[in-house]
Image (tube, rainbow, N blue to C red; front, side, top):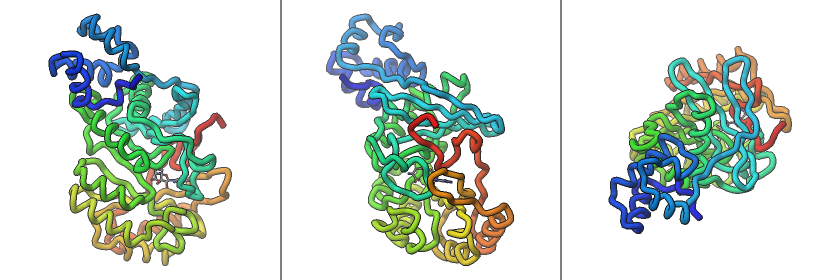
Length: 340
Ligand code: SAH
């Protein structure tokens, strides 16, 4: 049995053609699945009973189970703990901004990348998630909150470029106008810096945003906090970002978690500026969020501001990210796969 929600509209058309169905049926079924979020084939009232029964024989409709939800008292952010069909747990976060809502989704159960500041990697990676599972993080949150979601960030647990094919499928489906129809420009994929996959993604020429978790201005420092740096040095990573911009015309975002005494000094700011100079990019500074296992601390506000000013003086676009959901461990790097 196949999760029917993991099929793109095109694939659905091919699948229905096997049953001798006309192409427009694919659009109808797709809309039931991806706009109306039905949980059962019997809810597809304009589809013949015969076709519904055939679909039931070959496919199932995948739904997540909400295991827990926590709401931030500070900013209304909601962190959902979802149980997947095989019993694994993942977290997703609903965030309210002034005029739109965004969901932060996980792409793997856990993570293997080993970044020292991040909670998601503490228990390793169990498995990658499917497109259907990623889609249902967004759909279920829309249903539970009764709010419209217009942006998605793939910044929860996991390294999205390690589930490359499922990620692309997820993007194709969620941007489809017969379904949820989220604009590609409102989707951000974040990676710790897998160079070959970044190049491959560039060639897809999607209009999504690419965010790179940089966190250090040179290889030596980066290797100490991000094992991936041993595989892909910064010059190759920056070249891949340049290539991404050339192919897509989309400005790249660099995420830089400021960790007191580790990467927040004046010389770090200067090095970072030199590293990314001339690249069409934006830097997001994130004072590191507390994670029990590592003891890293954020710099105080003045230091973070000084770091920002230093980058600005070099002509770099930079913001300090407003963190949401810190009081429920729902901020960057705090997602896990269990109740805590
Ligand atoms: N694996 C992908 C997707 C995760 S995105 C990636 O690395 O980009 C999660 C973002 O939060 C990444 O930029 C990550 O580096 C950052 N992050 C992880 N732990 C953090 C922490 N404790 N404080 C602030 N940001 C953190």
